[in-house]
Amino acid sequence: MTIIGITGGIASGKSTLVKQVRQAGYPVIDADQVVHDLQAKGGRLYEALVKNFGPDILAEDGNLDRPKLSAMIFSSPENRVLSAKIQNQIIHQELKKAKDSLAATETIFFMDIPLLIELGYQEWFDAIWLVFVPKDIQVSRLMARNNYSEEEALVRLASQMPLEDKKVFADRIFDNSGDLPALYQQIDQALNELEGGEKS
Image 1 (tube, rainbow, N blue to C red):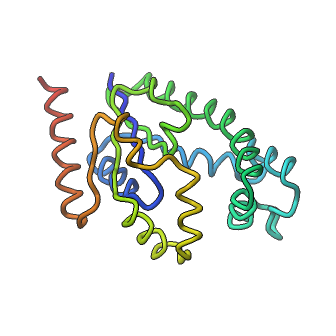
Image 2 (cartoon, one colour; image 1 turned 45 degrees about the vertical axis):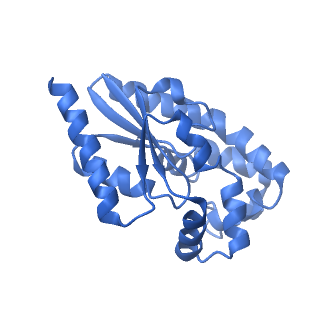
Image 3 (spheres, rainbow, N blue to C red; image 1 turned 90 degrees about the vertical axis):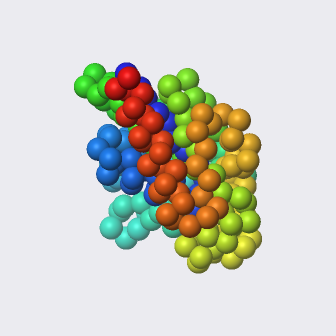
């Protein structure tokens, strides 16, 4: 069995890699989707976040107001630490449950975890694939995608380990500083090698 971890950073192009892996027929556990489900009304994270940050993070319909929650978390270092402490343990438990479930039926699968390295998930994987982009390009793409000011973009990036520092942990690095066809070519090569390795 082979389990591959996919990681990157905000606005790095990781979603493009994940989409191509799925289209090639491989199962992918999406950590962001797991978190989204846990944050749904009545979910484990929903209850924990409301308990710690109060009802101000809720929309009128009682669901989490994600922009409000994000703004509150990023408004101070203390809130970022509190949010991480609340969420990381619950997320770890749910991701392990998903991993163990797929491991019972699949010979190759992937897990898409944005904070894979920051949260110490490395030991789960046979290989780690990293989508890399230089910081200046990452900032400009994030500003364009989310309509952030440069200051807002830099604050978001500061909450994650720099992509440059993640390189040492990666078994394969996808350089996304160019155009999409260049990234697709790298992904196709990696998947072909993966399939070749399984058949040999």
